Length: 255
Figure (cartoon, rainbow, N blue to C red):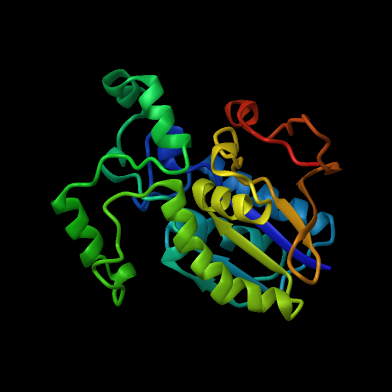
């Protein structure tokens, strides 16, 4: 059996301010730090150990991973970073308050941008795109690859390149893996692993800093998957005390 744990970063400053974040490199809030510490303690309490870790190049995911590994006394394991695990690029919506965007474009349109698999938000400006091109985090990446905006399917496509090139070989070598990433990146990977159709991801949400454990067979097909909390494997519909209720209401619980 192969063990894989997904963790969405702790609460970020833009999460707190109800803003679209995407590739904007914002940090964790104090609550986000606490959520990451709690996730590390829970994983350690239930006997999890990892051989390698993977994350994006955005500080909220990296810092969440650092905190978790510190709590687990695993800061020595290899940590691999890639832009392919970045959050979905939200284009011109990045940095904007979600309620303001709803007021301008309507709730139905915003929900379509956020939750549909194929619909892309408006493109980022040329000036903002140039900032991405000049960011040293993305040095060496072809200009034609860095997006102006992405749909969930776009995010899935580039995340799966990393999955097949980096994660799959490690799992086949029986390495125990943790991936610290972002809501839409993890939605894309869960969609792939569980073979969820495009229209089935509308209600799928990954809550902040709640370990999502996958047990995979030798062909890397899911045997079972579940969220982990203080009491152990989370029962269907149960909301842990440290989880945001707004996230819980939109979450597909996996038992």
